[in-house]
Structures are given as structure tokens and as C-alpha cells.
Length: 108
Image (cartoon, rainbow, N blue to C red):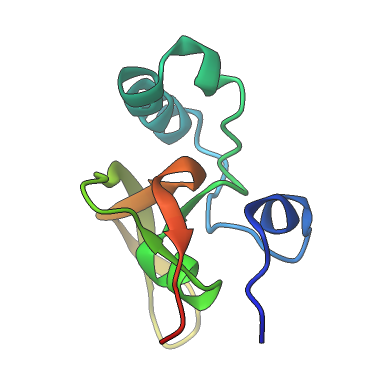
């Protein structure tokens, strides 16, 4: 099966990140994008579409380019009791790769 192009991935509404809408984490990633790619690239950042985890990119047929660095972010994990009530929330660090930092995995 041929991997989708980056353009197809970004336009496919069924492919999304686990971003939960936190403005603080969005700003954290935007600042890292600004440092790596410059101010003009920040306007292209969509936390739902183009900054995905390593595992997500691998499933899509892409891998990080040699020398690319992960963008650091956090997500909050909810611990629930047997009845499904949230009893604790704690932060978990995650590494994201921006769409400009990945390349297709070449078949042997």
C-alpha cells in the first residue's frame, strides 16, 4: 500500500492528533516551531493535524528525518476508579514531530 502524501494527510479529516485543546500546550509547541522554522511557519501549525507522535507518523508510513528533534509537549492523563469517575489527573510528557521534520519510509 502506497503511503499518503503529507498534503493528503493534512487534508484527511480522519487523521488527527490527540490534542485536547489546551492553549498553553499549543503555545509551548508554537514557540518551539518558531525557534526551529521561524515566525512565518507558526501560522501553518495546526495542533490537530501536523504535529504527531512518532508512532502516529510510523503508522502513516513516515519517520523523523535524521537529525530532527522532537517537539516537547505535555498531555494530561486521567486515572479513573471502577465506576469511571476521574480520581486523579497527572501530566505526561510527549514528543511530537512536525510535518516538516518527517520523510516517507522507503521500502526495501
